[in-house]
Length: 225
Ligand code: DX5
Ligand code: ZN
Image 1 (tube, rainbow, N blue to C red):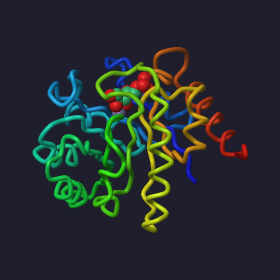
Image 2 (cartoon, rainbow, N blue to C red):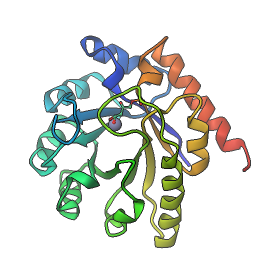
Image 3 (tube, rainbow, N blue to C red):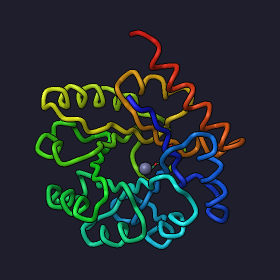
Image 4 (cartoon, rainbow, N blue to C red):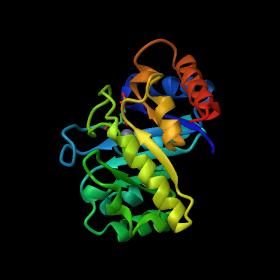
């Protein structure tokens, strides 16, 4: 199991994005999580392809673009051209989810599917063979700094069972309220990729914060349950 920390730039200072991102990377982050919000699917607006293109020039790690938008099909080419490496879309926002996931792959990006806290994992049964990763939201999307919703872990456990039953090997990512308190439980439930926004960028040194999260996650893999 390859544990990765994906700092969410949503909690960084946008005027100093490259410095913040590179500080997190120097602490061991191997992926950068980019939250794209449209003010329709979620009640907030963030960034689009131009910022992804600038970031692409400033960092070397893959960019994990989490699209919290309606009509994702219309924007996937733009994000891919801007340098997105992983692109995830919400099950709740995509009417033709199969087509959207195929479209992401056709642009040579890794496709991922995301579930809101209220959406059951069973809704993914017919698309799990099309994705490289599943992102389980452990907060309602739209804002950083929210409290972790523990029922997300039961969904992760169910997803690991579905994955084994189908003989698949997509990876499992979690997003929302991940910090030094919550990361260990998520590791034990079967998560490999941890998005962390405020825990990385809202206090202290992002490099040290990533190091500590990585250590807490790796320690949790050692503990027998
Ligand atoms: C929320 C975003 C998250 C957010 C996480 O809609 O998808 O990626 O940045 O922030 P924290 O880690 O502060 O909960
Ligand atoms: Zn996110």
